[in-house]
Image 1: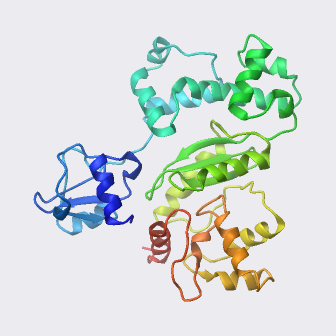
Image 2: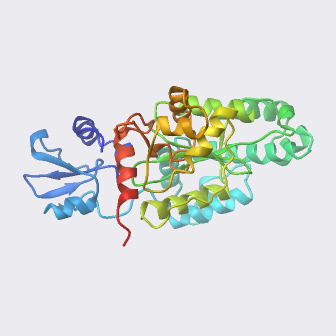
Image 3: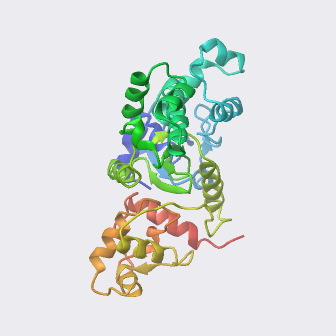
Length: 346
């Protein structure tokens, strides 16, 4: 888990980014809560932290009736799922609140959910879908103006301005290019940002990782455009596989990847994927296995540059003495992942 001071600060702030990463037992009341609980905050000396609800229950605490820690959070309401699927197939130019209500969705709840889960407004998401549609048309041969008109823009200048603002490039440079769509993926140890091209997953990082902006910039440089919010069948598949992995039911990922690096990085990342589930290797062993025994530090740097966490399992690399050295997502996550993989299967 995060350190105790970090968890208590998150509890005091009702920080949603920590929701589900830990649970707080309150000794004076005998209940346990989420980090987002709105009940009066207990004193620091009266709390104890648990990695999951099961541990809190086994320690004798009962679930809080205010924040309901036994209920699954961060899921998409069914009405939202139907709406989002329809929008992904046919992105509209605009969608008024009345039109949203006509589809059985509360527009206020929809706006709040988008802002909390994706960090952007619902209408910004619609614009991103339209830009993504236009990008795909241009990449496959359509003229930029025709693509812009088909996606709902009424002038070339307005389309060009919106396109460049979102993707970082002008429409004419999208021909033959690659569009990277991004979306939020949920896990029991924190939300992740996933990125996908048509070929596969190119990014999977915890949203609180300090290097995430750097990784997004690298994705932009590799693929020639800034990632845009959107949908992809690869997101559905990786979410299903991560769910199975965290339940202890899946040991090998089959979602296709589209990861581009230097020849050395590719060699390191390929070797990472050969580490068996539930086992670890040292950086020195990794260096020897790729035929570069002198390049231990370079191997460690390549591990840190891995843009697809968990699936490319850099968490399985440890120090020569078995210590849990560096992990971009935090050593507490590395410990949780290794503990999960070492847990006996039922």
